[in-house]
Length: 200
Length: 323
Image (cartoon, rainbow over all chains, first blue to last red; front, top):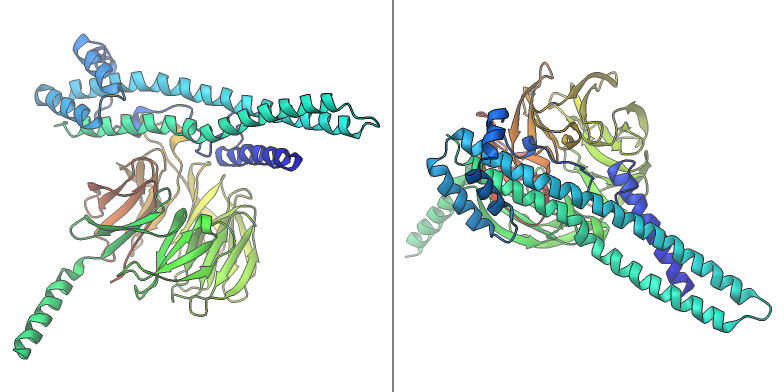
């Protein structure tokens, strides 16, 4: 049991260490992916640069409503692409750029909130790893006593088991958690490609 | 009858060989644990083949007979027959091989071992380790001079390009570059060495003769946050006139004038563009796009992206068969 805890703690610091190396210096980022706090439009768009008027256009009801629909991940990509192709039949480059801006303005805050959530998740794991370590030390102390209080040892062990189970579950979920920003990026990039295909 | 069969066979063989301008393109898919093979002429997928756990670095022998794949999580290099994609043997690599470079003669292979700060040198004929060269912390990028006399290793944490004598296996110079150097590439004339720095966001141009940095190329793309610009793969045309730099999550490939080292253009490719490879005639440059799971095909003369080809999960490395 003790070795498992030790291994877990080593794994936990190992993960944190790797992430730190991967992302530079940020301890708030438990993922292997390099941290990118914000997306920028130019990462997916090489069409016309949007000016203020295009920004206004992006907020008009028709384009805003279309962007709302396209951003939803439950709308399959093929259907989204078909809707964009339909829109592109009558839309000029400014309107297409406005649609891109409208989609970007929806996805970016959503993604930024996700990134902040991952930081909280990472911190919770670090806290939990420290608590597991404290339980372990406490158990050792109790066991080394001249007349060990076995009830207290059992209570500690139960706490330890629970904390470790939660830690492991969360650690396994981390892979998926870390991939969510990427999934959002993939969608907005695919939409951008479909919109760019309609440019003159 | 026999004669006609022979004629038919040779005609068939000719027919098969005729699209000889076509080369096989091999793409390692880091997450898919396989290699996607493409046809450089039709730009279509020929097939996908399993190659071991977490394939990243990929290269091919100068005669086109052996395909080498860094199976990072298997801690070895797997060798395949490029025609059949059957595994023929493995090579020892040390732990977690990520990137390697082949001596211009086809032997030996120089492998960066990120975890234990070594470059492992392996004889591709005898399959034996010839040397283990201690380098900086987290070795990553590998390059070799066109004459095969100098091997370059870049270390991510030490932020250096190490110049290694390929005869003595000794480091004879260290050049400090920007943060997290990823890749090292000589031009064919051997007069310039390009080292990309992922976090620093620059490419250092080094004079191999004096081991001095002669220029630092930085990148600015309208509408792209600077932190998204992360230079990784570098390729130079045979005449040295154009340098292509993959800019990671900026999703662009920078085109640089090889004479002046000035950026000429940025091409939008796919997401998290990582490594690149030319066809032997340099008509096309293929880029691996790790997050959009595709390969972009750049027309080198026109400097245009002509096609995106879906490949496996998380494409990482790419190599084109020489024949």
